[in-house]
Image 1 (cartoon, rainbow, N blue to C red):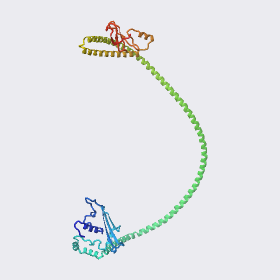
Image 2: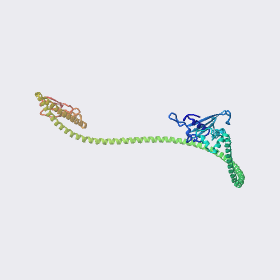
Image 3: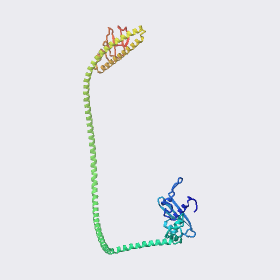
Image 4: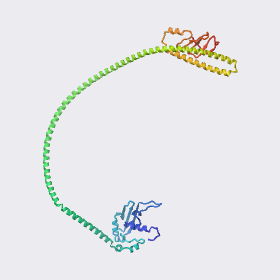
Length: 437
């Protein structure tokens, strides 16, 4: 093969050498056998298996196979496993080496000579050159067969030696084994007699059991007959017991109804007692409430008197303020230059008047409500007499009091927000409160 450097000449020769059974990675220019698998490039990914198939033309039947073409395949995986095949049928490496023996392509043959291999052959030892000449002469196969036969003979001799050792060991154990054999035969004889005795005993025992079974069967029949008789008696007793149970259930129902009526009567009695206790408690509470109402009535009478005095004082103050307001109104008509200041003063006075009026009305309303609420009921004649008193009385509609002011009659009613002055002072002017007598 001729070609430039790097063209793959050595790869082809290494592939041929490898497929024909080369086992040394050194002759394949590698450190380990997995180096022959393609490791990949920047453009192609690495592979996980290497495979080479070499096809021979065997029409002259140089190879001892009945095929015109013989293919030899070798496959290697990255896990270290290898496969060999002849015509796509799995085989062993030894089968390939035997097939190629005496063809010049066997193991150790120089059918492929690489660079610098010629000097290595010429400078090799005579023993190494002899193997090359034997391969070329076609006697390598017979030498391999001789070597294999010699190895088998050695193995056979070793096996014979081992057999003789085992034989001598077994011969030393023959006499003890003979004694043990006699003992075994005696044991077998006695064991047979023992089995016969046991069988006889078993038969006798079976006969005894059969007799006992027949006797027990007869007893069982008698027991069944007695059982039937007793069952009839029990059935009649159960029927009578059922009737008694029904009568007992009826009596229990009557007792239950009576107990239910007693329970209802007891519950009604308890309810009456409870109502009686509640009524007693209500009577006691009513008595206590009447005492409390009497006490509160006394207190309210005192409060009404106090509020009446306060109302009189407030009415007097109101009259004074009303007079001032009248004077201020007259001054406003005469003094137009001070109109703004007078109006402001008048507004302030009116606010105070309204506040006092509202407060007075609220106090009087509360007094009337409290008095109407806590005043004990009176006869109709007494109510009519009180309603006709001069100066205004306190009743369900009108609550008033007479407040004499400067000889004039002034009526005040807290149920009306107005107050009216009549006669005398004020010249009959209306100030917003009207009195009813």
